[in-house]
Image: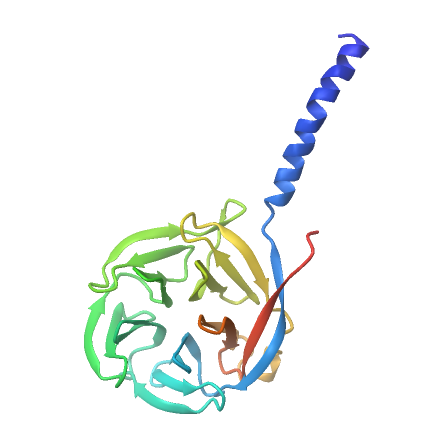
Amino acid sequence: MSSWFNRLVSLILFPLVLAAFSAAASAAVPVYGYEVVHAYPHDTGAYTEGLFYKDGYLYESTGQEGRSTVRKVALESGETVQRHNLPSRHFGEGIVDWKDRLVQLTWQNQTGFVYDLATFEPQRRFSYPGEGWALTRDAHRLYMSDGSAVLRILDPESLATTGSIMVTADGEPVGNLNELEWVKGEIYANVWLTNRIARIDPASGRVVGWIDLGGLFDINQTRDPGNDVLNGIAYDAVHDRLFVTGKHWPKLFEIKLVKKPAR
């Protein structure tokens, strides 16, 4: 093949190779850091498993057998203004509101509870296979994590499973999905035992962003650093405020996301 022909092929292919490289680089999952806007008190006795914000209050589910609760908490003071204790054999997990009800999972009992949202009066129980970790919702359906890379889709009335979402990053499954929150059309998920939150596109299951919360709080200050990890995301859609906390943490943090430069 002649040299002029080689140069011609190079001139044609180089822009294509460059475009492909640029596309691959732009496809890398962006990483976000944070700025702390405000820190609020958080009960260090709360082994946080579920969290959401509604009408000026935090609703929190706490775990551990014999100590599991559902709570309504004043944001500014961190004080519990309403509380329901679970039966001692149940380990409380994720919670979500739906209309005038509150739905709660338990860890390994394959049992969930439905309460009156205003009074926390139990209304009924429901069953599901496997473990229950967390819940969130959009306007039409509930989303449930079970510790795997698969989010279950639930009918909010019957609480039956109607579908699933495989969550991936760079084509690989993302396991240990824990506490969930619906934020501006995305599902935010704590990744258990890490300082990261995955931002998930619910239509494709792809992680479209990582939130790196390293340095937010030193868990060596807690009673059990091996377990008292980051867990708990709440979003105030009216005022566009994002809150995060962890198990037995003394603070709940309002944060603002800051995109990190691409490497």
